[in-house]
Image 1 (cartoon, rainbow, N blue to C red):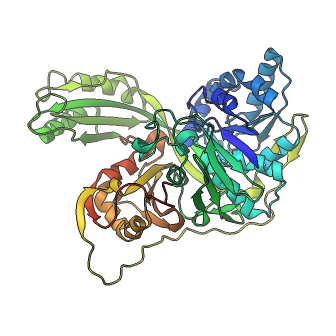
Image 2 (image 1 turned 180 degrees about the vertical axis):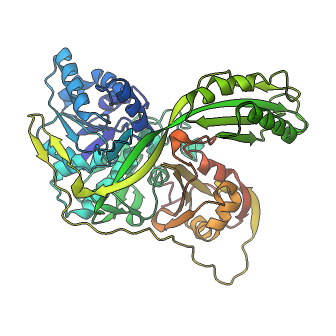
Image 3 (image 1 turned 30 degrees about the vertical axis):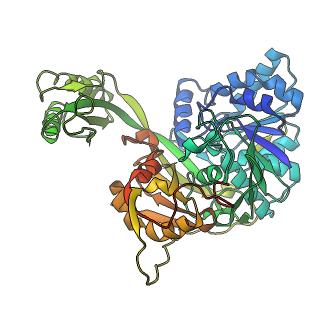
Length: 566
């Protein structure tokens, strides 16, 4: 097998994780994922200020603490921290190694940048074969730009086992492994619905390791003595994160998520097997970021009686002061009746303004809100100080033909190796929504009132302007109930903000799960969203908190044997 660890799930993850992973035990490869849709926008703005930037600068500081250790132990490093400028980061690593007097061989992958004169950034999601070429070319460190997150694991597995384009099941298995570790500690107990059941209460989960075997099967684990846990449920949670239908599209393979089988393999070890793959699509996804304008926000505290009337007064006053265009008012009813302290008796009125005019969205807006302090509703106060507007971005997704992208591996020798597109591709139309099987005629189950989260876990996240919400049951009996009960219509009842939106529902029986894709919930993407939970990270926990009729014959708590929590 090849042991591939991960030390970063996003730009800003635990700084010491690289050191911890190298010191914690044997690894063949250590990866770091830094890129998200929002990160590409941040790097694009960096590059506007300095054309030599465009990569994740934090990675260099992390590498300085552990490059010598990695070289001594023969652990190779693969990261997408190159962002918009992989060549620039590769050169910076060479300079760092020279300063540290370390002999390092750096390769990098390029070709993801798409020429769009009207865009701040436009990057295709490349596959894993360029990474494999760099490793086969002798690289100690491989830097990429926008590859799929899973490619950071798939590439080293290709290099180790010599898989080709036709080894679809193996590529699919490694893709699942890459998807599981790409978000770091999120697969070892981070952000886990049942965190109170973890050995350390979720205090400091360790980072994950994927032991990838020649047939593409994997064992997920972590270094001994690190926090959190690796269980079938923690792995299920991450497997449901930011996915759509059972067909998980990638540049090298389409991975069938409904073929994944999870099972315990010892303490803090979960075996992932049975994964099947089909030929990839003929196109690559392209993430496009543009600057959308400027925005600002002010929050009013409304205490006591007449909350709705107070909010209406503020709305009229602000609209009169700055005009209605671009204004958004969100009233959060956090107040409680007959409260004994001010905070418990208060609601929050969030006022957002987005405009192409920085001046109008800046001090002109925030100062107008502050000027109401002595001339508005009784008890008027704000939680925000007057400030200037900040720019925001808009994310959209596009596609380009696979053969329209010049995917190139630049080896440590300087040799440039073109990576040919896959010879066999398949058309992939819209994924068909899966509806639950209609319950046969039988007496309705006895029920009790309780929080949905007593029986199910959930994991949610963002994909551009869409959100996904994966829900899994903790037992076979729980899934038999869940798949009939949690329909699109019931989701709209429990989460009313989803009611006017298009929602796709998919079943994943092997995981005892259903997954919802909620189109347009996040508007123009995370960077433009004024939603209280802009990345939909808490959407699953909101659903779990709803009080519903639970079946009496389905026990709460984890499965006791051979089940998801084993």
